[in-house]
Length: 392
Image 1 (cartoon, rainbow, N blue to C red):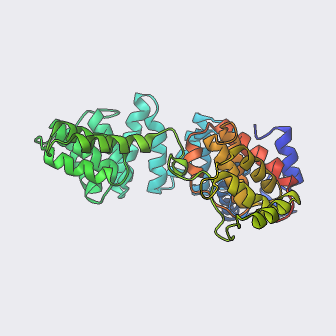
Image 2 (image 1 turned 90 degrees about the vertical axis):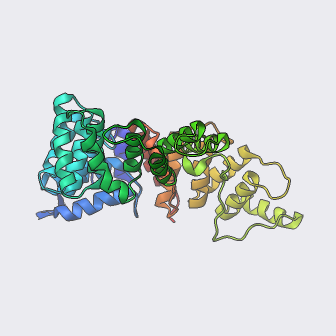
Image 3 (image 1 turned 30 degrees about the vertical axis):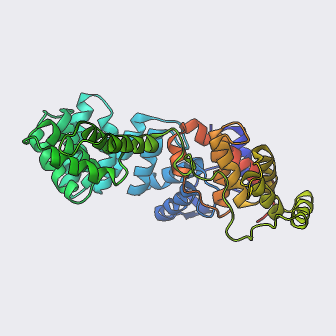
């Protein structure tokens, strides 16, 4: 998709090189560190329009020059299909190259991909997790513990799992705490100890781990290791459901749909103030359009909201370069409030808002719920719209 004519036109309009990125200018090779740093900017949308396709090109150039972090990033891109077509075999090739340079995180990342493969790949993943664990990588310890607990890629060994979970659990790792709690509940490799399990589930639940919340709810419902309480069982079940719910965290029920720009003063809502605001909006002033949209979305007092009008006003302000309006328009699309729910358009406007200096805390949450094709399409659309916008 990133090679589409539309995307190529957007890149050319932006003045970006569509060809190889290995040369800054005639006869001058770019150092891999510089290419990786530029790739990170495009990956994060830091000072530029976020563009995973452009980031992938730069990561590849730096990776081919031997940059370990770029090799790891390129492998992850190929595994997920962000910025370029997914290719598991090539993903493993690049993750292998990065892991061979010894960084425990890179070894762990390779193991996570191999663990999703056949039994031979799973056995190799266990070996790699052990390598990273020996270097002190806590998540590798936990993942290896899970493999021993389940007998995946290794012979099932509860005592080994117990040992692997111990250090990370004591250090506050929520996954380790939850899994260790399960060993105590099931008496796997250790004597059954419900109170100890409850303590571990609670520690993990208080860090926001939904499976631990569910497990704690079960303990309360049955009175295992703690005084039975239907109310607390329901509370923790509800907490788990809320974390897992099919909504972006920043847009969960109860959270405001539209956010106010704290750099502005709230508009006066008397007749004179509203008249002045209306004139400004009709004249195309982006600040007035944003304020009018905010009033339509989140009116003070008892005035009924008008989400469709809010969407029209935010769109008009966004098309004139208003970052806060872009963010709110994105939130409307993500929630499906006043407009049809559309994650592609939501992420498109989040991308544009980020390039306008308005970061969105929920962008990563939305990203996890989208397919790579949807993300790539959103960024392609953002690149085209960005060319039509007035300079900031």
